Image 1 (cartoon, rainbow, N blue to C red):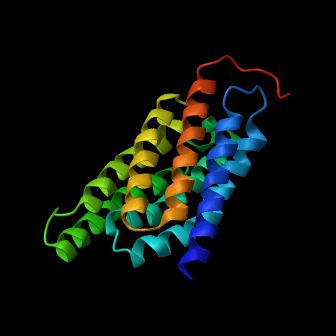
Image 2 (image 1 turned 30 degrees about the vertical axis):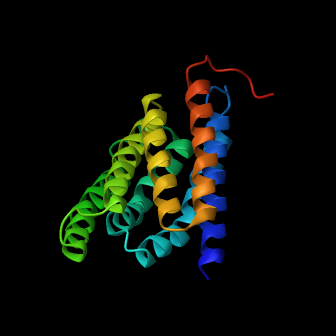
Image 3 (image 1 turned 60 degrees about the vertical axis):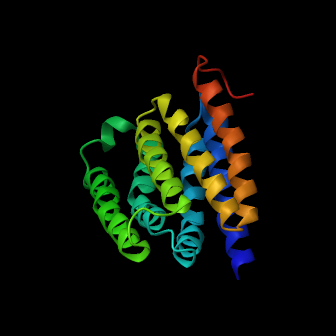
Length: 193
């Protein structure tokens, strides 16, 4: 079961990073971004299950709360940021994520008896990278890729420490595409080739 979940979540999350990074710096990046955000949403259930099974409460809460944020990113790609800024979904995406953070942190503190493990520290770095990176990329700001580097690096180590080797490799490969996306985001928009 764990192997199936790792393959499911890993392939969709890797596809997300590949598509979003390929979309950076392209004049017509809309379709790549639409598919990228969609892949994330499709891989989300598998990731949440794995994180809960491994007692990664902070990361599980943030991943669960990320659903509206990812849907917001998808709708921004479909409709444009100007049409989406003041929508209910825009507000829900913020409140879902920030509302679940205290629950995840609180339950982690309760379950572990404080911040006492490497996995909790890696979760905290992952959450910082995820929240900042997703927010900035949804607003087409290049700095989001830097925070995704922090997130992917932290999750790579976390998955390795917890013997989820497929997800560890997937996150390491994702990190390469995040770096690629960051480099491409600094270039002028070029036509799709």
